Each structure stands twice: as structure tokens, then as C-alpha cells.
Image (cartoon, rainbow, N blue to C red; front, side):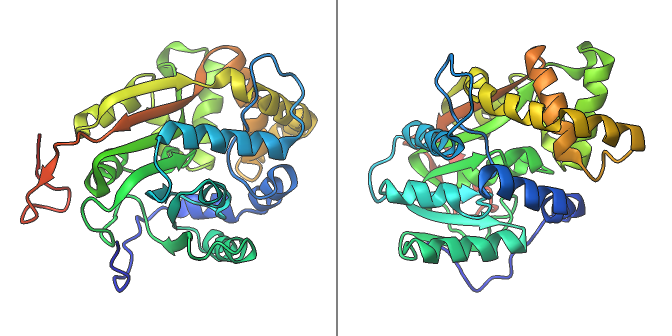
Length: 306
């Protein structure tokens, strides 16, 4: 499925490395989410966010259902973090290839996979989803991102790589954020979102106005693009982050420490932004046409014919 002897080409993105290696990120993700790096899923009308672990696994079940794949399907986790999502999907019968660009994520993912005895179902390696040169065309039946595509420095290139390595008829699911045109939202919310995008290294999120992700996938050749708004389903967890961060947030702003405590800032500003319908949490799904073929003599992104 892959060429393991190639040195991975990693996009230069020091702010991403700084974000995920920061003490706040490492402690915060461990303390609140057990190391998982995505929102939990709650049924509409739920108020309390507990149990958190159950909500995290429920979001991963939602992803599993969105992919609509048969047992044994080969799936790419593009930005696998410490491997929790891949491990859960492997337990449901899929075979996972995880990639990430943060060394300590990869090291912890290997430990987590071994601890669960899933070494034959889940493999993890260092690779950048902008540059999937280590994978041949049409390697996977499914691809997903779980709040990692917002970190892309060139989302169009990454989407093109996803299309190339996905098998005809395969499915993709992107669990990400989008938002209103920031030029039309109140200045305070606009400034706070731009600040979070900067310090949390989310350049793509700055571009993801409503509809952008859908059009991007369609332009790369994906079909049946659909968007599901899951904002109401993450609200209990978002509210928890707001309550926990509220008092520290004011001291952080007073002392000008936003760059060092971006997750605390995001805990408050994200709740305010969603409460004012400025941003959404969405699942974008699509499939690669079954009749897509490639001219392998063409460039790496492939020459598609439908």
C-alpha cells in the first residue's frame, strides 16, 4: 500500500509544532480529553458533558457511520494525533493507516496501539497530508480528518492528494469548522477568531467561510458532497470549556498572554462565536466517482478522467 523507504516531505509549519508541543496543549488535552484531540458528540438537548469519554467515542462512531465502509477497508487517518480515533475505528473492523507530523504524537500513538494489541490493524508513520508521495494512487477505501484539516497551509493541494490516493468509489469525511465571512461579523469576534487561528496554527480555518470546503472537494472531482451541521451536538463540551476557561481568560487577556494560552482563549471565544452563530462544527462527506481512472505518467496529483 505504501512506499516505506521514502523520507517524508513535511511542509514547514513551525507554529503547528509549537502549538502541539506547548505545555498548555499537552496538559489540557490530557486533563480534559485523555489525550484525544476532538469534540465529543451529544444527542440534541443534552446539557451536561459527562461522561466525556462516551461522547468522544460517540463522535468517532458518527465518523464510522459517515464513511459507510465494509469491514477490512483500508482507511487513511490524516492527522492521527495519538491514535485514539484510529484505534476505535479498528475495533469496529477497519484497517487504519495514521499519519502525523508531530513526533511526540507518533511516539504516543505507537504506545497506545501496542497497549491495545492492534499492531496488525493500525499503523502510524510520519507524513504530511500535503505530500502523500509514500502512497500509490488509489490506496485507500476511506480517508478522514478529525479537526486537523484546519491546520493545512495549502488545503487545495491536500484535497488533491486525498483524491489521488482514494480508490474509485471511496469515501472521505472531514470533521472540521467553518464560519461566516469574517468581514461581516462584529469586530470583537472577528479579532478573537483571527487570534485563535494564528496561535493555534489554523491557516485553513481562516479561509473556511461557509461553502468553501464543499466547493474545494467538488473542484477536485469529488461527488455527492454533503454537509451536516453538528454544532448543537458539541455544545455540552463547548460549554464546559467556556466555564472552565472563563476566569483564567480575563487574567490572560489582562497580561497579554494569549499566545501562550490559546486553548483557554479559544474556550471562551469559541463558545461566544457559536452562540452568535458565527462558526459551525460540520461533517463534510463525499465520494470519489467510481469511474475515475489515472494516467500514471502524469503528475502526482494524477490526470483524472470520468
